[in-house]
Length: 93
Image (cartoon, rainbow, N blue to C red; front, side):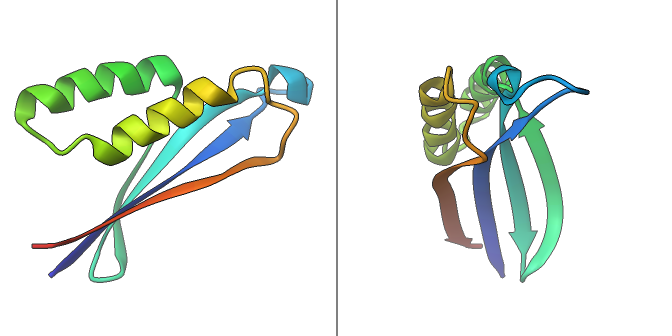
C-alpha cells in the first residue's frame, strides 16, 4: 500500500481581519492508495505540541519539523496568499 503525507502552509483570517493579521496554519493530508484518510491543521504552537507528542511515539518528524520551520519563517509575512513551500512524504507500507 502507498501512504502519502503532504502538507502546506496557509493563511486564514478570522472574520474581517486584514491580511496582516491572518493566522498561518500548517495543513497536513494523509492519503492511502490515493484516497484522503485524514487531515489536520495546526498553528505554530499547536504543531510544536504535536511534534513533542509524536516524538514520544517514535514517529518520523521530518515533514512536521519542515512545516514548523516554515510556520516560524512565515511570521510577519501574512500579506501573501499562500507560502510556496509544500512538503511531500511518500512511504510504502
